[in-house]
Amino acid sequence: MFAERDSFFYHTWFMLVRFLGTGTSTGVPQVGCRCEVCTSEDRRDNRLRASVQVKVNGKNIFIDCTPDFRQQTLQIPFERIDGVLITHEHYDHMSGIDDLRPFCVFGTVNLYSEPNVARALEIRIPYCFATRKYAGVPDIRLKEINGLSPFKIDDVEIQPIRVMHYKLPIVGFRINKFAYLTDVKYLPEEELTKLKDVDTLVLSALRKEEHISHQNLEQAIALSQKINPGKTYFTHMSHQMGLHAKIQAELPANMFFAYDGLEIEI
Image 1 (cartoon, helix red, strand yellow):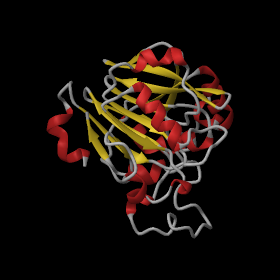
Image 2 (spheres, rainbow, N blue to C red):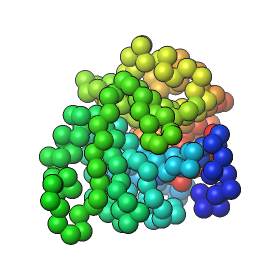
Image 3 (tube, rainbow, N blue to C red):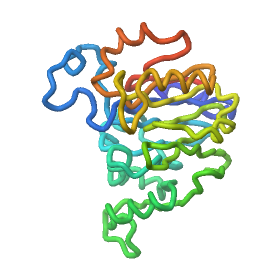
Image 4 (cartoon, one colour):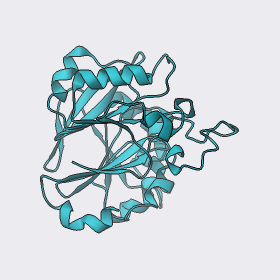
């Protein structure tokens, strides 16, 4: 757990990533399904909606804020959030924003997103961004970013990566030698240079079969090999991917299926 590693936390070279969720929009198990994955007793086959927590340079950063955010954060220390990076406006990536409320005891929580995503958030949860808020409303603030240009959370530099989610332009993020790309269908060729020398890549892979707006496993493996990181962890998986233990055995040596609660050091 992060709390047991505080001595590492303040080394500027050290980064710790915790997978809060590794499932697709329906989660796993999927409601009403009795397939072998949804009924598996292997906890690695239970997947909340996809999100990670990143601790780096003394900062506590989240990527996406899912419908399972409350459940996910009950498993980690309760402490200040220095920023939440929003990849795009789809419900499974932003609908936990109201559950940021308890963390506002530490101060304002800043959400970083592209302008079109910020507008979508204002429409969906207007009370969170009203000029005059009533008591109990989360103290959160929208910080608009350019989907191509780097920005900083204090001294942590973050490089957005343009990703195509079918026809919807969304963003992934690179922090030092770590990159997180979810809901990928296509990565524009010009974005590859932003991923040069990445040590650890998190990449979405929905299932084995073709999908209109997500990479399947074969496509995700091919993209990983093109980027050529030291290690790749697949996320945003559906129950159609198969059992964790079985499919993991089929992956190349430097590729892994992430699972909820997995922590990696970078």
